[in-house]
Length: 483
Image (cartoon, rainbow, N blue to C red; front, side, top):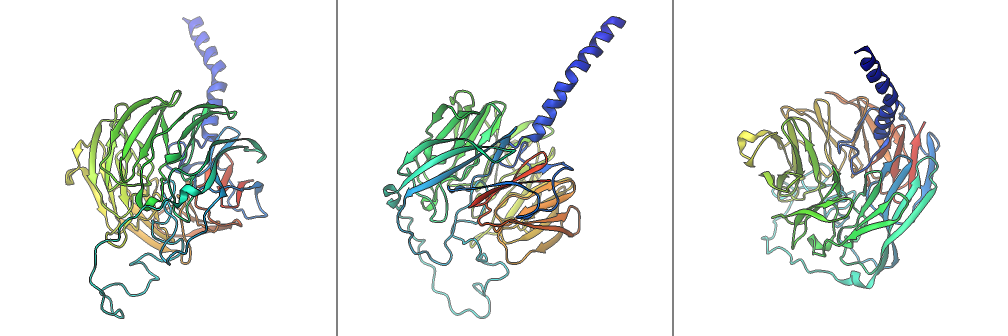
């Protein structure tokens, strides 16, 4: 008996270092949009609190392509996707309210610029029905959405790039597709909106209508898949990123013609299941919700839906409305938080849905509904007992996650926010499009503790975090920040 006990203890002592290595390695990885668990929460005492162009910059590398996709990390390898225009049409004149579409589950709403205030928000002039505005013409029929096919005369190349996380040196670059685009995009958008995903053996680069490509970690193409070409809202393309769970790749492919969600075997690309969706164009990324009853695949849209990841069976659905399906769901063991930004015709609403619901969600399945969350394009951040909602124009709204009670509001004027906020050791961080990261204490009152600025523009992708390093990706430069 003693010998058996000593053998077990010796065996445990022998494998303990390997278990620790595996655990530490997992914490170093940022394999998909919004991180390991899709929640943007880390706990690292080694991450720097202060940085700028001259402080705590380990390396920086210029970028020559365009992509709103976020970076991902596995071990010492950093992956990004981008597209490079080789022949483009002249930029057409645009009205004052036109701007870039949302990307990767976040960003300014279609039809809005990156800096102009949204209708009904502070900073804008009188609204219909307010004093100071003259008589309004009677509303006519909605403008016809006429497809623009001028993109067929353009030439782009699509790129997947791998960098050494320690040095910033490019390790390899592949061009999965080159030629005329298959669909159009917003004039201010890109053709690389979707964040790649990796499992440490393979990296999956998804470019919407331009295909899904699977590479090994050294850049060898293993398989590729074409999910079809369909018209999207105003021809502005796609933005929902793939999600990987237990060897299955999930893609939410919503458009104006043939929306569906599909599950693919990550090793082969073969379809495991596909379910049609009664939904138009969305930009939200699916979320794997591990609650106290089961694991669900939750999607947003004008209707929020939950699927069984194994079979694709619909578990529940809830009509949430809204103007654009942009932010991704986020949840804890008891509740899932889903909602869409408002706009000209609808007010933003944020719902908390209880775990274990079946079928069409009724009032009994809704823990709370908030019409004052300030939900914009960035996905809300769930941290401990609070839900931190960062609006696209710098509005900060903090709600009690259990009850939906609004704890406080704060506004940072003169900024635009696309990227998802993150949390580290009781500090909440959010990045604006001009490269400034603001940090404030988690809790029931606002107290800013830092403001860190990097040079550049269009910091629309969300940050990637690996151990003691941040990766920030702007339009012109990618930065590695660490002590």
